[in-house]
Length: 224
Ligand SMILES: Cc1cc2nc3c(=O)[nH]c(=O)nc-3n(C[C@H](O)[C@H](O)[C@H](O)COP(=O)(O)O)c2cc1C
Image (cartoon, rainbow, N blue to C red):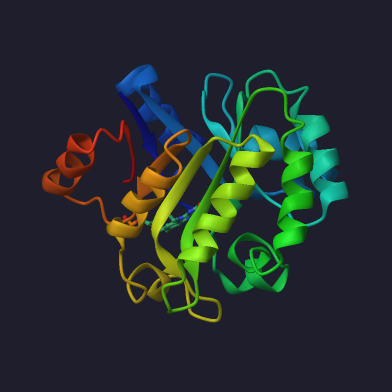
């Protein structure tokens, strides 16, 4: 069984991740905080050493919205030995991220997401995506189904799903409480895309919820 520790800006820094990795060993994969591709392009060494200790086994989480820049960042990451997994953020709703058309905001542009992911998959080790179940307050299954279809077709089989919608122009804290958790839709996604590895995240705060996902044979729980 694999476990994943959700990335949290300001918390899951390289020291905290190192502690988690030392305690839990290979059974837990940790993620860096979200790093904008520009930081990797313009300040490679400083960015990598800020977010990774020599013994960190974490995946790096990146964000970007310009395929050309993602290409450049991936070219760099392909040469960084300690990093073995790149996760692409399509779920962050923060206003600064939104202003730069990154994270959740980027998902308004399906074709651009596709172009970005076509560069992302040129990474030569593991690739995954993190996304929300929907955009805006209303349930719209076609959002997540269309995106999962796209990820699958492009060859990205591992997707971390924050099991609630994301809402633009709503602060990040409210974005973790106002759009309601929707595990049923997550389970529907698992049925529809059984060939993919979908990992649930969001409000897995107690043993009961954890065991619920275990009983459904979802081998990975992605949460705090
Ligand atoms: C302080 C904080 C920082 C976060 N930073 C990131 C981040 O950098 N990248 C990311 O994908 N998610 C980030 N998240 C979202 C979490 O990874 C997770 O998806 C979210 O908190 C849902 O889980 P919860 O309902 O248990 O809070 C952050 C969450 C918090 C609370």
